[in-house]
Length: 336
Ligand SMILES: *[C@@H]1O[C@H](CO)[C@@H](O)[C@H](O)[C@H]1NC(C)=O
Image (cartoon, rainbow, N blue to C red; front, top):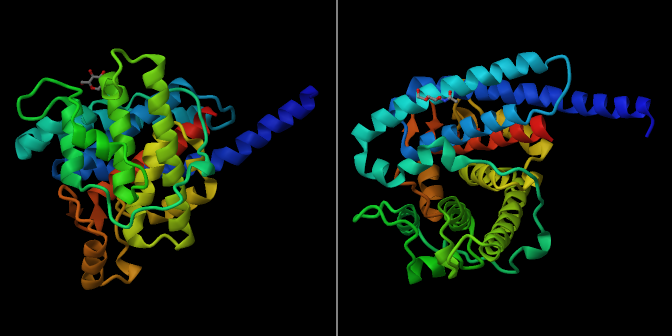
């Protein structure tokens, strides 16, 4: 390629990503303002996404690869966001310790920036790994999922011993054909295994290359199916009660490096879902009556125990997964 062509190619890359990047940054700025005004009312799940966001912005700034006239302004805004997120997360953690000490003790590790350390490199899902058949009912509920994760984190009752292996958790967390939230939680289980170095779960003594490959294989199977689920949700025109799952899938699979979750057309939808308060949740004009919503939730056995509905139709869980997803777009556009 001659140099004129390279310059042209680089310029077109900048012009393609720059407006989107600015949209993402301004959405994250609004979401951070929401976080600052509600931090003492959020659940652990509600704060975790903002901690992931902080890790994503930090990583984006360290590996920033774009050129262009607006880079200095963009980086300045990102630096400002990291400081605000860090400051408010610490206040949120303090408030949570008092308000919900048991759940806080169990899951405080996911509120550390370190928990969300990002690995370099991108990969893609593989449609040949999509399950031929998916179960209709979830493979396990939130209670069981919490229990299995707490055993890895080492915060289960007698405190301290991490990476505890049980027959039930191994069977459930590595089961195939699971739908929806059990599927995304199976991926989260793998993320925790990797973070804690729980190679014993696979019968290995150390986090050797065999354990590493087993984890990567599971991630690929789970994310390929989460991609399939997201494509189905898109085909159904993103019904409100599935937006939370959709965003959770983008957040988690994007976090472990599957860049095909960062589709430009999905970003357009996600940005539209943000409310004027900066949060995500049910738009008032969406046409759901409370009765319909109740039906939707019971039909899908989907009442998140720690989920909080805040005023203005804001959902803390949905806001959390939305900022985790948007932070991933930022990292993807800013570093690749
Ligand atoms: C976050 O706040 C803590 C405590 O004030 C501080 O030690 C740390 O350096 C801050 N991190 C960032 C990225 O600002």
